[in-house]
Length: 324
Image 1 (cartoon, one colour):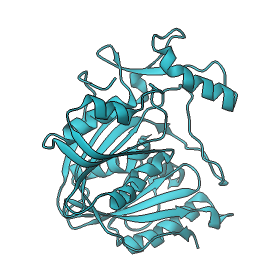
Image 2 (image 1 turned 120 degrees about the vertical axis):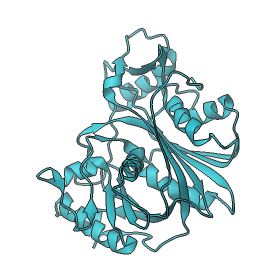
Image 3 (image 1 turned 45 degrees about the horizontal axis):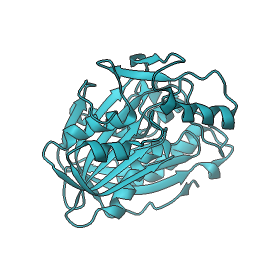
Image 4 (image 1 turned 45 degrees about the vertical axis):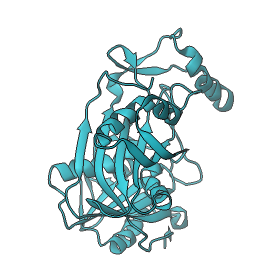
């Protein structure tokens, strides 16, 4: 049996609005060695050289209207759409794993300084990788009280050309396929909303040694789907590409979706969910199992019940960016 934790249903968190913006690799350009903001980037380069023995590292830039876009900028784009009808957030949870381009001035501080919104309780966490997308639901469950309104914001930007996170401790590590950067913002509450989301817990694949990754994941998903009563399953794109057969997911008779071309890291399952809600593949009255993967041995799962269609905003990159 897989090591499954916290499979009992918990207090729900409701999602009313999903906003997302993506930044694929082809939009980036490589920096010159004498790039003007090298002082901001030098801590990243030093860490890679000193701790990982890497050399001749190059950094890359995402440019919009001649300006460099940071992870904080991507987060702000998503938050601008999310906060059209809000001047105050009771709780703001920001999650990222990769370091921001401006190492000495993290995104949460810049967002709070540069916007007119008031935030009573800001919170940031890091180093969770793709799991942050669903572990953030647990953080919101702990943090939101009563009729408070909150925002969960996920943002990732890989500044180093060769920057790839790895996870240790499992027999199968590494993430195949292409990753893309993104920001996702969710409007959250504890009382009512379009999506009722229950955090189900983390699952370790360590206890299933000697089996293929497809067998491990299949066994875990079957148990999770029974608990969720799932009509649909959305799996982290990089994991789906590892367990596909003949180009399609072969997980369970329950409806699963095709394998996306790119993995959007901590925002991946939310972007997939938003797109499937937009095209009508997922409808009100249905349960959706969401499964994030850290690239190694850990899965994180949540169950979303669609009470009604939430607000959905797929946003373009634009030049009106305020945190840099």
